[in-house]
Length: 115
Image 1 (cartoon, rainbow, N blue to C red):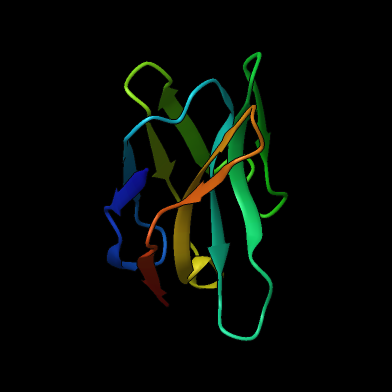
Image 2 (cartoon, rainbow, N blue to C red):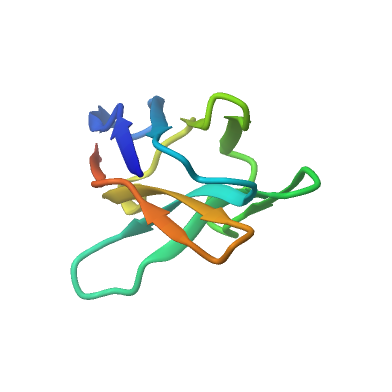
């Protein structure tokens, strides 16, 4: 299984970016799909994820600014990021968790927000 993430880049504060992630290979039933981010020296943190059943969970710092979209059948997900802030600067990782307990990660895409 491979997750391919794209869409990162450099943007000014207040701007927008859309991250994309698509999976290839056999995953099986999906428990959750989402995005996490990490900055050097800190733990990886939840940005947003959709859990089986449709519930969407957002990190407190992005709620109201970021929106997560997904297509289970296509094993794809997108993260629309609006009103970006310098503190959103991080490497963003897409993630898919199967109901069988497998955890798949993309390679990470860097988002840099300049002030």
